[in-house]
Image (cartoon, rainbow, N blue to C red; front, side, top):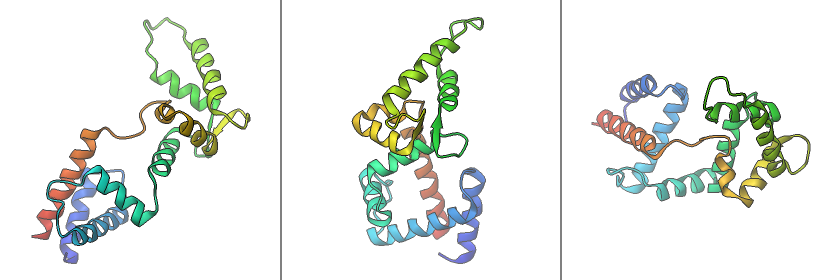
Length: 174
């Protein structure tokens, strides 16, 4: 792809997808182009989940466990310290629980859930959940992967992003 077309594509994607820097979009496009070249251009119907997993493993050495556990864990620790604290658990659970009326006081119930969560996931008993704690808990019970709320995009959002990215790349290649 010509540099001018690549620059226009990067600009176009950055306008609609705000979560990536321009340099990251540029790298993703280059990676996508190399994948299309390797596959002989067989991505016209999208990139299926198994192919994507294979790419992540062969290029980045990422296994499903590594990817899912690390991504979800990083979504949950809110203050950037590398651990999920009692306060963070409380805030996540408080924001995700339904209250029947505005007057209902649920802090006590949420505190009990925080205690239960720590008993289930805090393997080193330090009062917070480290990545090692999180990974151990999720390996024992995969339902704990999204215990504090959704951390992975819904399938329809992934398909929409793939379609948009593929359409933009194919438009700029011609």
